Amino acid sequence: MIVAFSISPTAGDDDGGVSAAVAEAVRVVRESGLPNETNAMFTNIEGEWDEVMAVVKRAVDVVATTSPRVGLVLKADIRPGHEGQLAAKVQRIEEHLDGTG
Image (cartoon, rainbow, N blue to C red; front, top):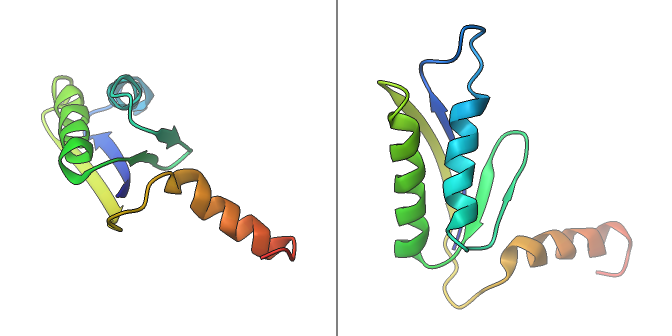
């Protein structure tokens, strides 16, 4: 499965920024060893249901240490038997765009 998720604390720094807390959540994801990528809006992670959800929970928990309330947006693509889809899905789109797909 691939999960795209965004975690945000309700309490930010003095300017309302949340990047420090989000960075700690991303650190949890990267240290998990699961395939992942982070963009401006979401972090994507790929693996089996239990391992992916455990990482998401740990990421939420680490943000909760600095904020009394945490928001989580999560979208999942559950497709048993398929691995390596973080890159493969994008590659299929690129093939259509360049006329080879």
